[in-house]
Length: 93
Image (cartoon, rainbow, N blue to C red):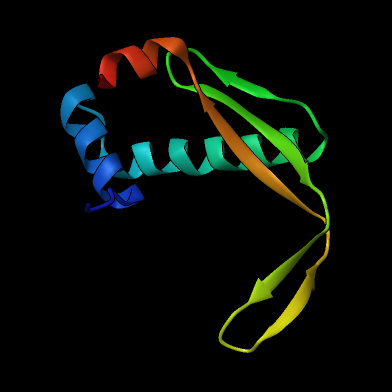
């Protein structure tokens, strides 16, 4: 499966909206900054028809690595999770 990169996404948005690609890239970069700021403050960000970005605390765990024959402690960490909206899920099925 090939993933779509930000430059390709900006190009496709620019073609559909007749906006300059540079303007679309600026909007995407700003969106990225705003989502990061809000999620860092533990505020979920909901984008209609896409989903909700939220901060999730993953607990500390212990993982076994068979190739080394030993267990490793993984510290707790914060991750960003995107929960797809019902509309998006329905559109891709």
